[in-house]
Image (cartoon, rainbow, N blue to C red; front, side, top):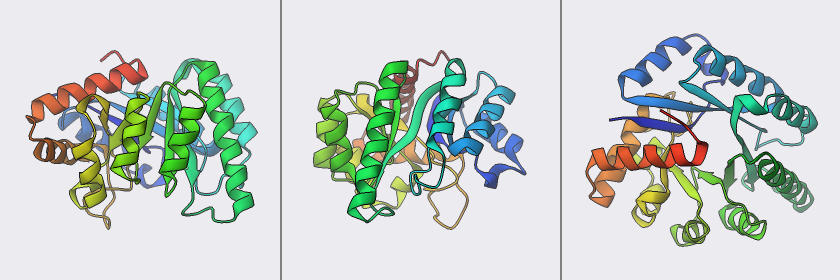
Length: 253
């Protein structure tokens, strides 16, 4: 069984002291690849260093801090993306966060950032990894309006019925281990076709236990829950979600 963690944050400071053991545990649990997301200039550079250290196993995407997009120099993030185009496999996470960003004028600016990064991903022919906390409908509408093609909606927290609009547009949705405790994620997994599903940890958050640090190895819980909910053999879920990740990111594993 080969699995792919389509969205993790190994570049988060919580993994600084035991990164090698975390990666080893992921290998031991059947993970064939981890897609790491570096947020902001510092996170982006850490992610690039990690993907270099674990070359051929950890891959980098670069995005901005979705919760506070106005506190970082996004032009610096863009420069890092352009300077390292050959070393990254995606743009993001980027998107909308209406839970954190409440003021209408700030949301308008956030939508502007989102639109810019959709265009950048298209120009570089890279997938875009989308954060859409409490903003799933708007995020999907914007992506469809921009005719975005290579899209991963990570940890989507919107209605399953609206996620189907994304499915119709060919978008992928990645499911974190928190599905074990989230009725919303369970409804989402039940509704989504398997050919549109990827596994993700979103580590260090969205684990089975919200009080414990999450890590890539825990995507086995996503696998088991999807298998249970959809009444599909775990080996089939593993094979198809890995195939989907390879198709989206161009991985050869």
